[in-house]
Length: 364
Image (cartoon, rainbow, N blue to C red; front, side, top):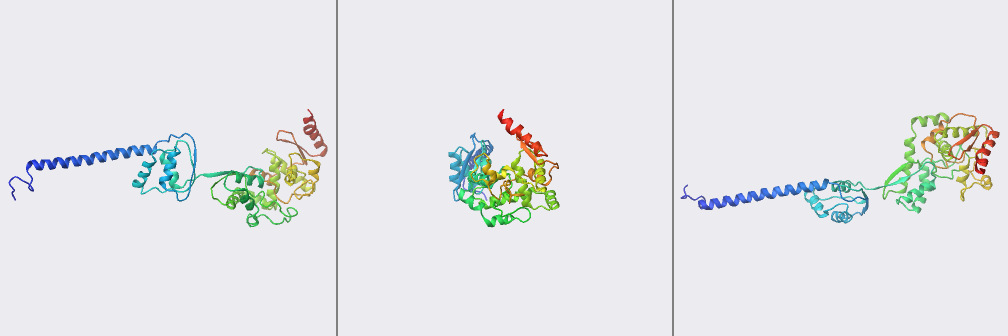
């Protein structure tokens, strides 16, 4: 149909004007897209760049904290910059920020992406608890309290929980391994290692992890050896704990274990100082005649045989030494004051060693 040179009622000039407007509109869209793409690319670069803060930051976010408030706190602490832009990015490009509450440790120079990954995956801070070889229950309890995961009352209640002690396999009374009741509770059943726990972990679960770690390190060969000797876990841990407290030398552990077994075979008292220290509630750092003569189930200068239970947490090296001792005729040993010992088969030899290392040594 002919409209006399007009299309839809528009003149040529009108059509050109529409074209120019449409072209401008298209160009503006292209420019906007290009600008948006540039901004998005720049923001992606920002997200991947290391942060400026050069120190580690510890922050806690309570349950119910909004994403906006968390990002603002991070910005206030210098962990990230542009907290508001990060929030908008997450909201419109990742279907909203979803952060998890908890305690966080933000290391130095973390990129915003790394910070966000922690918050989104719930990679919250875990608090370390170090249980050293030779640690007593009191030491372990103090370590738990110092970690900030529990207070002293909570730890004391858990350590004395009779149901938990029974769960850990601690015998209520010894049979052939020793005499009397086990007054030390779970002493020796918590394996020395470095553990990590999140805030809010019950003390009972902390102790369960330490107990299960013991089961993990007792491999098939170790358990087979216990069965071969006819030893219970309790007896093994008891002897191993004494070895652990007597020496820090890896080479000496099998020697000392063998020496104590020699004493047990001939009915000689173990007479080991660490058991005296363990039985003394008011030990002041020096062992006196009164301490040696104190009647106590754990004082091996008084009792015959092994004490009722472990006196500390033994490491795997001491456990192995107790099960695979080095054979000898040694019955005595004395410290050389350098964390090693001189071993003797006879008391006469021992007297000379004592004179050399404990009398003449300190006299000179």
